[in-house]
Image (tube, rainbow, N blue to C red; front, side, top):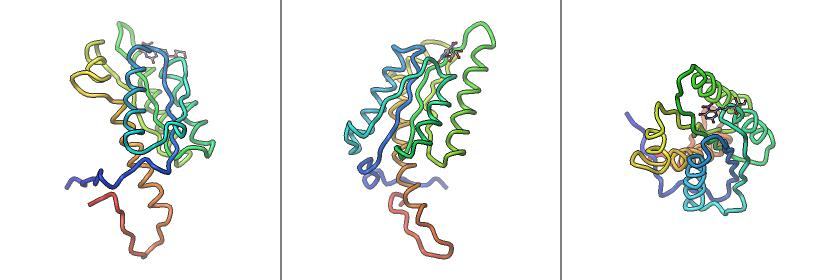
Length: 170
Ligand code: INI
């Protein structure tokens, strides 16, 4: 059974967000960044509660995401990058470590950290996912961040045995 999310009732208001953006493939990561900011502001976040941090490449996303999550200043972190497969195994190391490190940052801090990293075999595939025919993974990651920020706040008050209503799930 798939859980239905009541998007009418999940809002980015009253939350603060960090967006960590890789500069590699910056003409594409800038589109992810614009999509993420669009999703957050359209959902009620003020522009001044969204902090943007830049890192050289996707490999550096985890450490910056971890620092943002540890700071206590943000309710969710959105890590954005584009890794495109080349002729060598480099892609596997960069994409794999970015994914593992982002998950580690999230689990170690308890702050939701979103994996907004496009991993593609070709530039065309990447373009399609950065505001092209397949959507904008930055926008999607930000919507997931809003959902997780809401869920985390609801779960903070969980007491065993107590009836708890999760308003954003219908
Ligand atoms: N970084 C990316 O974000 N995307 C890539 O496609 C990429 N490629 O192809 O090499 C990439 N490499 C740089 C890497 O993320 C680090 O910045 C670098 O290795 C220094 O640690």
